[in-house]
Length: 170
Image (spheres, rainbow, N blue to C red):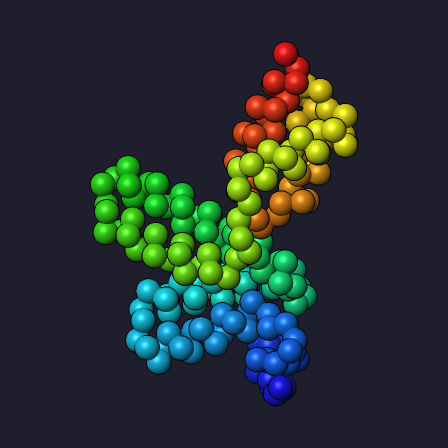
């Protein structure tokens, strides 16, 4: 077990028994990408670190791993949106680049929830809140997003909740 003096490790023990922060993993992987001359990986990780730094400046405090997951999830969502636009424009070379960056960033995110898991959580949230119509969707979404933050796409969660509420209303 060795203590890491790297400013990005935030005083945690690295490669030992303790947790290594996502930011520390990103820094280690950036160094490795530089050594390997992997331009795609290097670019994706630098973009992620820049987004994390911007979020840290905006928050005016160090970010927790959960905050970093939210930042990386937003970056993946932006890449997916860009990929859809490039696909519509017929730019398959740019689609491939965005897809590669998404794969790199997803390695730092927790496992995404399956649709079945989201449906089960939504049913539980609807039962907890007592919602019975689509008009009460906001109440259910507040509960749901607190539970799935960083592990599911908000639009997917929203459509599942809406469908369940429409079914229960009819």
